[in-house]
Length: 83
Image (cartoon, rainbow, N blue to C red):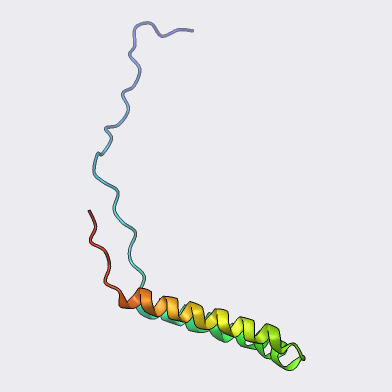
């Protein structure tokens, strides 16, 4: 049952090349997904606005405006150089 005269198989050589970065997404696709997400929020926002709960609508509006301002600032700042 034992193979005393044979050597174990050698593993294939490992490639030491660095891992490649994943491909970047197209900017048009990202913008389309963002716009679609915002459009999908409208029915819920309209329901809250017209169901007599205006306070919640104001809060949601402030959160959306704050998020938009944050994203505009992030886009406007230049990226940090990679080290």
